[in-house]
Image (cartoon, rainbow, N blue to C red; front, side, top):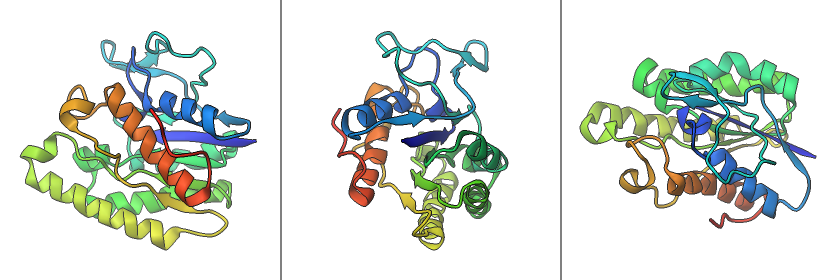
Length: 227
């Protein structure tokens, strides 16, 4: 049975009252994978913006109660935060595939593109230390609204995505493939986010579509995404 783990920042953990792109991806896998699978991870909560803490279990109305809440995602966490955690998470929860969306927080608050790329490489090494056969599917950084008014930040995002593509090519291994997705198709900050960063339902579908398309095309795992 395949085991998937979501790893990410605020766009992945989601906020109270949201479905999250994790839910959209779970629905897609449920409907198209063609076999049993599990969602695993050490955390379960959503972020509660009113309380400024990851303490909510209140997903959007209509969320399927069968949805497994497990993940490794955190509001304000990036590659540098997850690299020290991923070895134990992989060892404890034994995912076969890591679905990773990280980097915006690093570039916005902590590290430049080069240091962020080094932390991404460390993340891969730490995960493989726990399981040399673990697979990675990694989303490039989607620029947020800050990039529209901060050219230096926009340049760092673009440079990091170039470095991430090189890292994926350099670290890809037959027994532990590292797959870089395409940017989410048609993603529009004005209509797919509620604040220029965090996804609305339409954005959730597009983020899930990026992962689904990559896995379907590269590995024959599931199908192309249909909202």
